[in-house]
Image: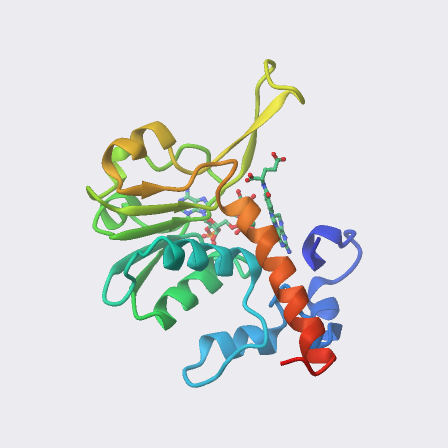
Length: 200
Ligand SMILES: NC(=O)C1=CN([C@@H]2O[C@H](COP(=O)(O)OP(=O)(O)OC[C@H]3O[C@@H](n4cnc5c(N)ncnc54)[C@H](OP(=O)(O)O)[C@@H]3O)[C@@H](O)[C@H]2O)C=CC1
Ligand SMILES: Nc1nc(=O)c2c([nH]1)NC[C@@H]1CN(c3ccc(C(=O)N[C@@H](CCC(=O)O)C(=O)O)cc3)C=[N+]21
């Protein structure tokens, strides 16, 4: 689907990304698109698909972002970092939690909006959440399950049953951010074609 997922090991991701034409960078991973996303007053040609999908979920669900405390768990180039930048663009006060963060639970439980992309199954328990928080679970980890069709099932970063009791909204895994990512990839691809043929 994207550069990273298709690249075989001997290819250098940095070199490949630099070669992608900006107008066709539907992943939004080119350093110029990322730079424009991070700078005030500039607009990237494309916003990365998963972060864009998370934002779309918030906006379409009527979740206010301006002035809210948001915690993003994870800081990868493809998910955590661009999500934090996007939320900041929408005027949230953003804190990033990563693998070296001390007492992540204490930080996360103050957030109005939690977006988690760590890839650690069931890490976010109810004690990590403020009552009424909105929780977007990006994590998708395959865990062994002999009773499942393919011998594994997908699990998010959030302990879904616990979060349901305390949060005001939680995205499920599967059936949450994953399908939004694919929809946003199609959206970016259509935008790219429209721009190419002068339809915008
Ligand atoms: N649903 C979807 O559309 C998508 C889902 N994903 C899923 O999202 C998850 C993250 O993906 P990706 O960003 O590529 O993964 P990476 O492994 O590149 O990044 C994981 C991030 O989480 C942080 N992290 C890891 N463990 C902990 C922990 N115990 N506490 C706090 N932070 C932690 C890491 O911190 P540090 O930087 O310090 O190492 C890192 O920044 C995966 O499960 C992936 O499958 C990804 C893309 C799309
Ligand atoms: N450069 C790059 N770009 C990516 O977009 C990227 C990546 N690297 N590395 C891996 C992750 C993972 N990822 C997913 C996308 C959709 C679903 C998805 O649609 N999941 C379905 C379930 C699918 C199933 O059941 O198998 C769902 O959550 O409902 C999941 C995971 C994109 N990634």
